[in-house]
Image (cartoon, rainbow, N blue to C red; front, side, top):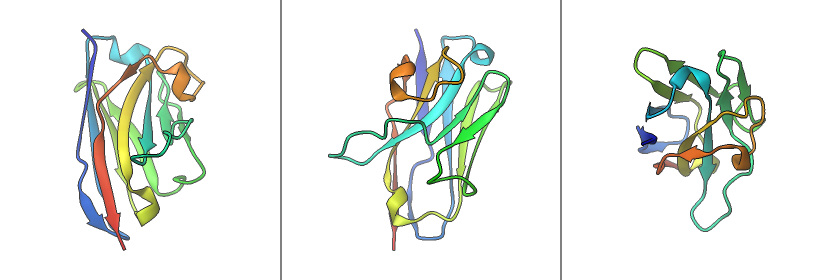
Length: 124
């Protein structure tokens, strides 16, 4: 059974930092592309990954987070990370990790497996 479990969400002040984690089980971690998506409650989820990392470690970022967020993964721990710096209230959302075999495509529709999400709240 494939499972993706996020953690690390919290409430922080504007300018602060958080590091999200996503433990992946039930699939060959090294063979999948992984991404982080976010959704504001009551609003449709952003169509594209805000950050993605390919099976070989190539990273991709949405313009809205480039230079502030860093995606990484630990093969030994089957864990995906998202380091978020210089957070603003506009970053407040539920953050979800997802896995895809369609590497290089970062649309939500390309991702077959999803976690439940973790809440990030940034206050001004």
